[in-house]
Amino acid sequence: YLDLMAAVDTMLERPYVDGNRLGVHGYSYGGYMSSWILGHPDREKSGRFQAAVVAAPCINLLSMYGTSDIGVSFGEVHWGGSVMDAEKLLKHSPITYAANVTAPVLLLHGESDHRCPIGQSEEYFVALKRQGKEVELVRFPNCYHSFPRTGHPKMCEEYLARTLGWFERWLV
Image (cartoon, rainbow, N blue to C red):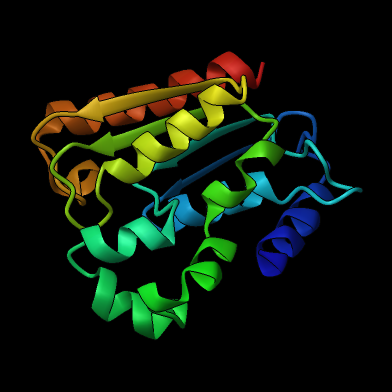
């Protein structure tokens, strides 16, 4: 997070970057980081991003642990915990910080994603919606984790169109 924000700070020093029209987009681990960024605005940078596209994210490490095709093997090595340490997993889960989100969020997710199951986006959608946040969820039927790169061309096109449309809507 700190490294990513430092990179954003560096980019904002460039004369052609409009700091009032910043969006954040991430897919898979990038979806995790995008949702983490949205939930952790610091005092000086609060509201930095005016829109977000969060795709195929890992939102809740505790539920992902038991539902992802790599939840146990990947989780215990990279998350540093197991389901037995629920408190630690939730501390590092973006859903825990959903109340801090201020930017409108578009969630994009393949319904047949076994790496980051669609339930991750569904959980985040409900958490944001219940708190009155601006959020939309688009489900891509019969699409697996890598569909934006290797899926049916119509689905790839729709993914890109939705992403561009969201940023055009909120970053004008």
